[in-house]
Amino acid sequence: MLGKVLLGLALALLLVPAAHAASFDCTRARTPFAQAICTHPDLSKADDTLAATFKAALDGLSAPAAAEVSADHDAWVRYANIACTDDAKLATRPYDTVGLNCLRNLFTDRTVWLKNSRTLGGLRFYYVDHYEALRTGLPKPDGVATKSVSTPRIDANTPEAAAFNLFVSGLPDLMPDSGNTYANDSDSSSLVVTGVVPARITMKLDNYLHPNRAAHGRTAVTYVHYLRDSNRRLVAGDVFSGNGWQQKLKTIVLAAAKKAEGGDSLMDDADVVGDSIVDPARWDFSKAGLIVQFEPYEIAPYAAGAPTVTIPWADIAPLLAHDAGVLEQ
Image 1: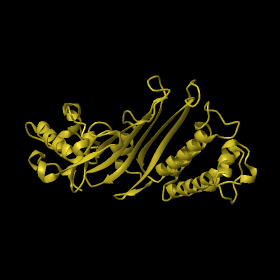
Image 2: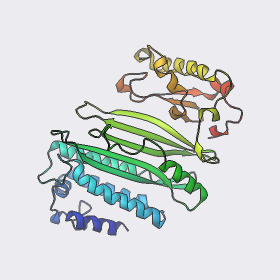
Image 3: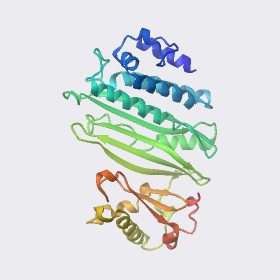
């Protein structure tokens, strides 16, 4: 199947597949995109790695799932041909340094996303990806805004797979914003399955927004916990119960966060992050305890990234619901 996919791309991009340093015959490269891959060893290597990763991502998939992943990859190649240009059109001249760095990032990011295709907890997951490159009308280097989203699917003909896939496809705020709000900004969303236990499927959501003309982008990390028996998203009441558990949990987590961050703590006003502590989207679960996720700048300087605080289960045992079987590891 890989050969057929590459052949289809070759016809579209004036490339003919053959054994070479890149995944196509560089003697017949005609476009600046193909020539950039052929003339820069790091890009050629990245292209080889991407081709191998794509092949591995298809391994073990059913025919319908493999066809979906292949179609997404075809779309990615078309996207990659225009995402690093000045006007979201096919390049007509060699890529400059900015364009080459952009291509390197594209190949790296695509490879990382394809590696998420794997089996966890006896379930074979693959990913549905969507890409857009939009002309903004702004001067270089802000002439193109890129949009991307990746979401998981279970490859199986079972009621559970159908329910999970329907749940994920209906989640809000996952599609890239090609409308008016952030149309001229680059953004991406990656929802990745990180754990499967009998009670739930846990997914990590990385949202990234890079406004035009900004020095750097903004990252937000949250979690989606899918309850397998009830086909729904976990809510706070599935984990905690009792009067005042919210304030008690806030007190415990904020104390732990201040201790962890020490003199670098930015929590002069704890109320700023208080409500986020009791939001299940900020929780992950481990054998060591409850992991509370914070965003950059919330409790520590930007250089600290998106920090986490782990609260031992023993410290919050009195707050847990009696039937909190969703915490099983």
